[in-house]
Structures are given as C-alpha cells and as structure tokens.
Amino acid sequence: MIYGIYYLLSIFFLLASSLYRVLNKPFEIIFLLLIIILSGFRYYVGTDYKTYDQLADMIANGQSTYMELGFETIITLIQNAGFLNQGVFLVSTLITIVFFWIYFRNNSSNVLYSLILFFLLPAFYFASFNGVRQFIAISIFLYATKSILTKDFAKYCFLIVLASFFHKTVLLLLPCYFFLAKEPSLFRLLITAAIYFVVINVLGQIGPTLGGPEKYFSDVFDYDFNLKSLVPVIIFISLFCLNKKYRDVNTDYVISFNLLFVASLFTLTPLFSELPSGLVLRMSSYFTPAILIVLVNFSQLFQQKIMKIFYNTFLFILASLYFSITLISNGEKYALMPYSFNLTLF
Image (tube, rainbow, N blue to C red; front, side, top):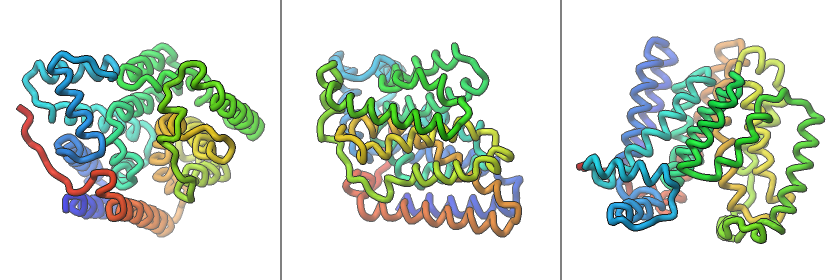
C-alpha cells in the first residue's frame, strides 16, 4: 500500500538524518516532493475529489460556480495551458504544501520532522485532500504570520486578501495582526476567552438573521467532542507551563502560543455554546497547524540527548498510531483508500 511505503520512508529519513545531520536538508526536499506527488497525482482520492473535478468541468464549459475568483482563475489558466483536470489538483497541492514548508522553515527547529508530522497527522495532510480551497488559504495565512513579527501590516493585509480569493473565511483573520504578536498574560487570556464565549453564544442566535451562510449555522457539520478534540488544549497548557524555557530556545513562542490559544478556544466551543460546529471547524483549521511547530520545538527543551531521542520517538509513535487508526477505521469513509494515481496531465 502506498501509504505504508511513505510511512516506512518517513522512518528511514528520520533515523538517517538523526545519525547524519548532513542528510537532513536533502531528505527534507525529497520528502517534500514525495508528499506533493502523492497528493497532486491522486485520482478520486478524498471525498471532495469528484466535486472539484465536476467544478473544473463546469468552468471549462463556461458555467458559473460558487468558488472564489482566485481558484476559478487558477483553473482557467491551467485549462488554457492545455492541462487536464488533474493539473488543478497538482497545482493546488503545490501551492498548499510549499507555503506550509516555508512556514516550517521560518519556525521549526527540525523542518523534516514537521513535514513528517504534517503527513502523519490526518487533520493536516489528509484533510487537505478535501478542503482544497481552504487549505490554500490556510497555508498563505501561516506564511503571513511572519509579517506580524516583522510588523509589516501592509504585507499581512495583502496576503490575507490574496488568501481570500481562495476561501473567504480567511478575511475574519485580518484583526489577528493586532492579537497574535501580543505578549501573553493570564489576565488577557481570561478576558479574551470570556469575550469569545459571549460572542459565539450571541452569534449562534443572530448569525442566520444577519445573512450568514446557512450551512455554517446548521447541524450538518456537528462533531463529537472527545479526547482527540482536547489535543490543542493539552499542547497549549504544556506550552503555557513551559513558557520561559521554551522562549529561551525558540523564536516562534509568541505567535505559536497565541495561535494555540485561539485553537483551544475553538476546540472548547461545543462545551460552552450550542453553535453548530460548521463555522468552528472551518476557523479552527487556520490555527491548529501551530501544533506542528510546537511539538517539534519542544525537543529543544531537553538538554540530555537520550531524553530528546525518547521524546521524539514517543511523539512519532503517537502520530503513527493516529495515522494507522485513521486509515484502518476511516480510510474508506474519507475516500483515502483505495489509493489511485493519475499521471495524465495533458
């Protein structure tokens, strides 16, 4: 099975690069290309593949669609260049994964490990098979967070507007420029959390009246709150407790802390509000990728090499279990299995 081959390669790359650091960068590039190929040349893999394939046909026939202008423009350019619909999936994958990679390079202490976790944790790589347009927007937003650190408001706004041409929900993140770079304090966190839970309860009542998309205020996207839902919260609390040690060895602290704080608020929403989960799930996806940075950077806190090896091994085992359980239990449900290639681009 193709996923098994990729899994074994991830083990080999991690082991080899840990023994020979000179291999870290080459393996990083190779793995980057491999996951682009796996996603870009997938054929009827992912529950939304058929939908995007049909939408591309509609554009080719001059019909209107509900998609944002940026994505429609990319499809039109791809078709005008003589590519078949498979080119849409390849280009979308290329944009998404390259921007994620740049985000990792800007913040991760081990880019290869962050890439491998991105692949192994289904909430990211496999999810991008379905939310194609939104994952392009997510990747651009993550890239834009560097503009917050450099205090380049104009660039941040430009990137967010650019991302909105692929998924308009990202426009709600424009105010994040004024929040994500703020030094965290317990008082500010408590006030922000209180305001958030008041707002979402009000939003659940007046959202449809204000003309919000009905699907985001219906029960269609509801999900079961379980232990897996608490992962961002657990990682956030760990980061909060280790804040001084973490910030001493990692430059991403403030942005990652605030991203995880917001992700935790979204995760806890079902406990405090009857707002259906559609909008919550959409918005949380912009913030949860900070997990891929923080989990890897936690290893910098261990001074003893044996403890660092133990931590990284334990983290890899947990990610592997999540990866395996998802494929075995829900592989067919999410149309991840069976996997098929389509190498025909013209």
